[in-house]
Image 1 (cartoon, rainbow, N blue to C red):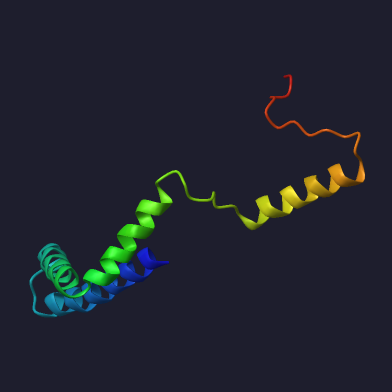
Image 2: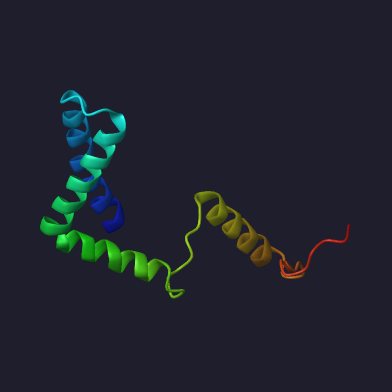
Length: 101
């Protein structure tokens, strides 16, 4: 969530600057460059706490220690499999093997 928050802050800085530079007639390419550089500088100078939180969140996510993210469909499938195994103890589910083609 911290990464999303920091990204939205930077986007909120970039968009008005981009529109301002377009309004000033710098052209699209230069407007992107100028707005990006200024948004970067402002976020670097004034949003260090949010940047550090976003970095910590990304480090945790990609460290290998984070819990895997599962979609609602995957959670429902796992619950259905667990219910099947509980209702029928003679049924085994082995997802490690590939089916024979």
